[in-house]
Amino acid sequence: MASQVAAEEHVVVSTLAHFELRCRSKVGSPVARSRPSPRPALLSVVDRTLAEYPYEIAETPSNVYSVAAANSCPWAAPCIAGPWIAAPGAMEALGLRRLLTNDEIQGRAAKARGFEVLLPR
Image (cartoon, rainbow, N blue to C red; front, side, top):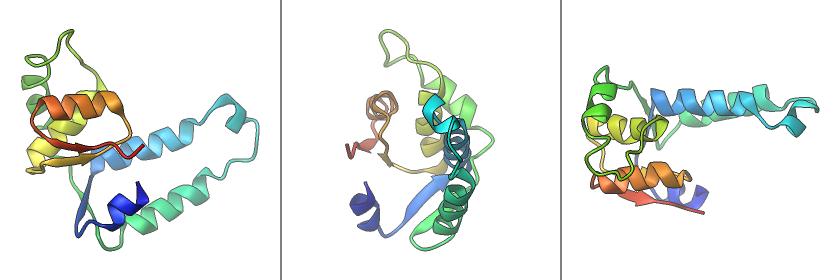
């Protein structure tokens, strides 16, 4: 994934994606919770990294949920709902066309909506 990001001239990270990253890093696994947490240091590195080139943190538009909801079910059988539709909704609201994700469900949702999807794993 790092090499794919490094090859990009401009990487947009929505505030929604940034928020999800922060939440997921705080949850951790049961094993991780039993050890001292490196998460505050990791989050500090993430925040510093996202403040540098080629990254841009873009404010998630207020219409992201209506955009996502309007386009979530027509292509899905069975209907895929939940957080997986938010990223494609944010991308559409921000005018973006490519998604880099390790989430296969999110990738399928984005592909079904016509986005180019990069699944690095």
